[in-house]
Image 1: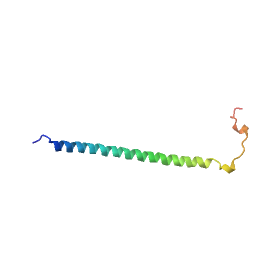
Image 2: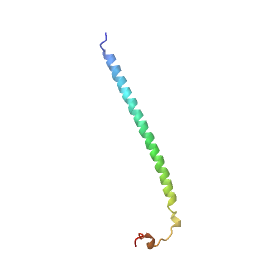
Image 3: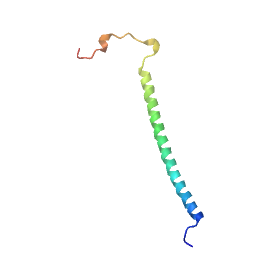
Image 4: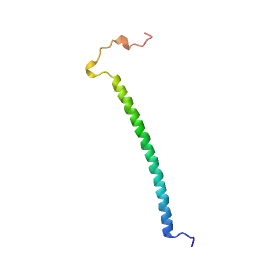
Length: 72
């Protein structure tokens, strides 16, 4: 009576698949969480960069001498 029947084998297979699916779901959740953290960091960095760029109407005329490297 210790030999697995067809139903026992199917149940075992389903339990294994369910366990693997749970593991995969946890990995995907962790990946999404890390990606969201990265997106939040990038958004903050983008906002900081936008603050550094002057507005369209307030562009200043820059001299080409300002663009030369210091060794000239």
